[in-house]
Amino acid sequence: MPLNRRKFLKKSAATGAGVAIAGAAAAPAAEAAEQQTPGKHVKRYSLTVMGTTDLHGHVFNWDYFKNAEYTDKAGNAQGLARISTLVNQIRAEKGHCNTLLLDAGDTIQGTPLTYYYAKVDPITAKGGPVHPMAQAMNAIGYDAAALGNHEFNYGIETLRKFEDQLDFPLLGANAVDAKTLRPAFPPYFIKTFHVPGARPVKVAVLGLTNPGIAIWDKAYVQGKLAFPGLEEQAAKWVPKLKALGADVVVVSAHSGSSGTSSYGDQLPYVENAAANVAKQVPDIDAVLVGHAHVEIPELKVTNDKTGKTVVLSEPLAYAERLSVFDIELVFEKGRWTVESVSSKVLNSNSVADDPKITKLLSDEHAKVVTYVNQVVGTATATLTTVEARYKDAPIIDLITKVQEDVVKAALAGTEYASLPVIAQASPFSRTSEIPAGNVTIRDLSSLYVYDNTLVAKLLTGAQVRAYLEYSAQYYVQTAADAAVDVEKLTNAGGRPDYNYDYVSGLSYDIDIAQPAGSRIKNLTFNGAALDDAQQFVFAVNNYRANGGGAFPHVASAKELWSESTEIRTRIAEWVTTKGVLDPKDFASVDWKLTRNGTPVF
Image 1 (spheres, rainbow, N blue to C red):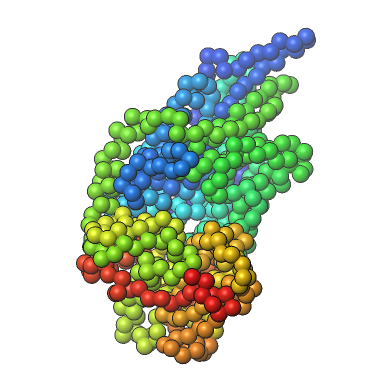
Image 2: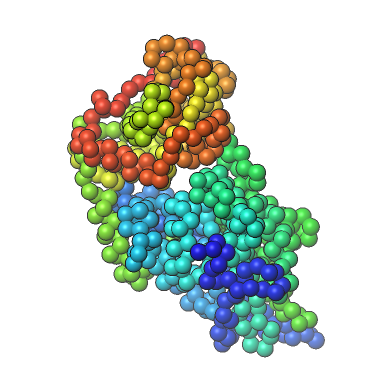
């Protein structure tokens, strides 16, 4: 299927690009209020725009990794079933025909539910199922959604199949065909609201996605799709929307508001550009923000060119919040003008699940619960990530051991078979645990929460040393005589846990009393000082291999092999084959933290 042939596109003589036009809403009985002033007859209209983002496969308030209802210290609840109840309440209050429901992306990755319908019972199979997220969002009645970066994690075929199953468009003005640079997805969506006694109100929704896709899912999109900057594409499309008669312009952006990019990611464009768009591009009224997983009830940004206030809101991820924009318009001199915009977030813990959604997806949920609770082995000891950020933990060694074994088997019989294989892994979670006794798929899935796949790269000893030095920037410099608080020891400069790597097969110290760049000490291989010219096969996840985190050398290194099977699946296969999960088969102390040569722990 050509990338730019979608069911929601119609050709527009005005733009020459895909335009998504919704049918006009039915005329409401009394949604326009009239205000009488001396010598004037003013008509007003109230529009409510609701928004979610970063749903990441959360349909129900259920933790598949714990096999229990989701709970946290803040009392949050999760899931589209709760959002559906909130949406129904707003529609009842405002009138369904006076509302829009949008999403800002990252929908089909993030839980065992979404993994199951991408890989175990895939929606791409002939006669395959309808994706649970498509079923839920269709039933709730979404009007449009922006593409998120995680939409691409399972490849373009899965994304296109999901798109085909939706009753609403997936928008991405800055997701373009790599060759023609024409939109590969509908750039925008327009909905018309009829108002008695006045010209209809036209609302345009511009969808923008994250330029980081070009790095993070390079294996799927390189040569097929390109992702120019949000500011650039908004500046191109918003004037077109106004020319098409849009009275209100709402942007749904899978991009945070901070104006920064992820630690180390060397993007050609700003990753979190939503506020930049509001500041730089005139004629935007509201922005639904995504990607950053933070809660912003209301953020007011002043446009640099017009001085107009633009309102931004970001609901918390996983369907924990619903953003609500209230937009007031006034009809004067034959046209509608936005008079005011305000926003807030509603907490999904304040309502119960919508029984319609519960009934709709109970079978799919039950299948996934059964799947993740399959026993695949037995553990001789409890393994945990609680201290994995600052101590060499056996549970992370399990990941690197599996990666080493898979790559060694893949390269057997090749010219690289004689080279030593080393591997990286990150302490993704601070709470994962594989208990002693029966080991299930959900235990192993909680250890490796991302859908990363495995790549083999060729590195030299000198490059590995630089890689380790870069990774060691994760630690806060701590003097030899200073007290050590493990809660303040890591995440230097805001660096996330997933951008700190263990490297197996070597022995080294990390001296945190030293400044960043001079911390790797006593680096040895096979008991001898590391030879900078020694060649290694580096078993690395695809995020890192494609440049995620901007670790030195790895992205540009020669690729020897790669696969599409998830590392999580490889771990489950390894444990299933072994039958018994015994630390003696994979655990080793490869590194430790020191201060001026003295171990910290």
